[in-house]
Image (cartoon, rainbow, N blue to C red; front, side, top):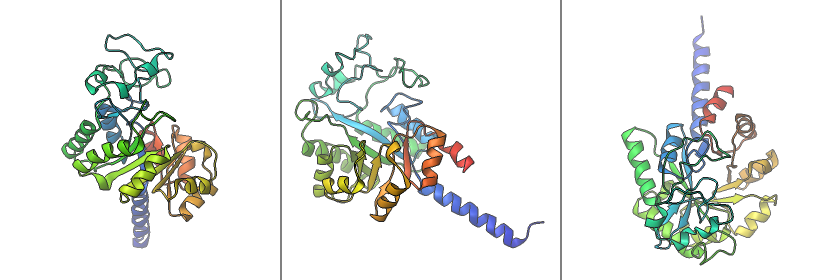
Amino acid sequence: MMRRSDLFLIAFMLICLQSAAQKFDLQGNRGARGIMPENTIEGMLKALDLGASTLTMNTVISKDKKVVLSQEPYFNHEFSLRPDGKPITLKDQKNYNIYKMDYEDVKGFDVGSKVHNRFPYQQKFKVYKPLLTETIDAVEAYVKANKLPKPEFSIETKTIPNGDNEFQPEPAEFVELIMKIVNAKKIAKRVTIQSFDIRTLQYLHIHYPKIKTALLIDEKIDFEVNINDLGFKPTVYSPYSVLVGKGLIDRCHAAGVKIIPWTVNSAKDMKYLINLGVDGVITDYPNLYKKVLEEL
């Protein structure tokens, strides 16, 4: 028979584990890219069902200044079909430049029916690239209807180097178009703007200092150098997962910056990084986290 002190200890441990799980930021990459077409409303809702606390989404701008969910400012040949149902080639994909199209034309492309060779287990169905506004509305309605916690939104400004005025507006306009929506939807406290392009983060920091920021990193450059180039401490430092070690985690935490690596797509890697002490992970497979928790 258990002593009362043992029961109190078990209860305390369960509370601690639950608290740790709640603080850990499980970010569904482009929704749940490994399972559903990326950057779609359906993918975002699936990520919520799988327990994602943050929805990461990429944004580009159309010719008529709409904020559109998309990883590239053009239609990626890997999974896009033209309005007539024909595939897009690698050679031609940049000719389908979203910044040169009105959104009504963008909406005619199918980004969910074609088998994605790198993600063969995605559910397949016809779907379009949604607007940021309708995505937020759909997510907010879904969590209310299903009594789920309100998620965070991590919105990336997708830019091509030297692509200003050809594939994207200049940083100030890009940020203003996003922030107009964020403020209109009254979700500013739940939004992080992330980017590899430090110009958008620098503009945001000056003009919207209360908005959380995440610096995306894909090269092996010292943390201190990247922060110095940025000019301020972001809320989150988000490096490519293979660049993450205990030393980097410690330097981030010593600076008061969270570290959330991308893209963590195996239970083994997720468990390893959690044990190292990361504050969250960005993953194409948010369903992995439950399995990892059971093993920790």
